[in-house]
Length: 369
Image (tube, rainbow, N blue to C red; front, side):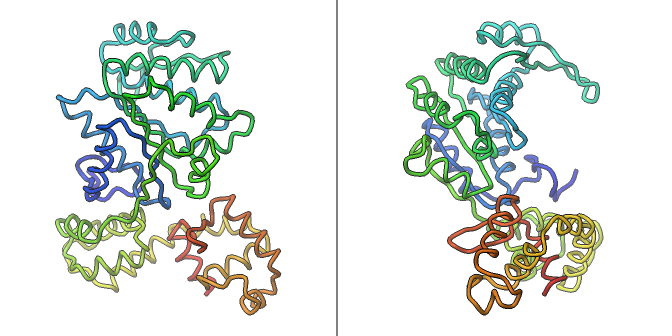
């Protein structure tokens, strides 16, 4: 078992911290209220909601139905609706014949059929959505969960929810609001999660269709005390070194976990110091060099110049002195920033631009500054 997972969702055995967030989320679920959880990427939102759902499913006294879908890769409204239906069908883990009979009675248009995974040797169920329109698929999903909600609580967690804003041919948010607002949703808790804060919050801002449909919860980095309590079980490491790693990673869970993983692999029997941490970080950045260079090759010259300034300065990016360093105009700088934000290479919080991928930021500073 990987005790420091950094590329996958943390399982219950290796999940740590977040007690306050878990308590708060459970309170919303118990009262069938809605949440929108947002943060920078790589802070562990998916692992957090996975842990909440895992604990609910483990509690034999709690018959809440939990549906989780990740919609990051959707390219159409139909993709979104299909994933919701798949999320529902995947919760039926009892006898296949019984499950198919139940689902068939719930769906008006969608057919279901059994599947077999040769890797896990397990049977499953999938919805058959050929030739069905988005509106029909969404109606099938909601009418089904409304029926189930008459008998039990339901949690519907939608990860990377901001991706619906990339679908332009359908007003998904407006149609979704109709169902979420329905009286039939009174026993349902909707949890929307996302990493692109500006896109996610825009879906819930004033005058937007989803306005006031969910309470915002910003996820901050894991507490240093929680990190130390867990990591010190496996490494000979002092708290001041945990602080050092935390600051180095700017609180990014994924990069910290990667560092801890390699420390455990190579230095579990020695006391961890700054020199060892820097050696591990150098190794991680060297792994990523080819990928980051390939990324930079897609930048225009002005975007590379803008990136250099962003890496060097936290504030005052549009001051004359800063722009003159790279011979850029304000318009060119703004255009470059807008493109980098659209490509998710750059983001903005409280009027401060930042690079969501901390490893890329550290790598960039190494070659540019």
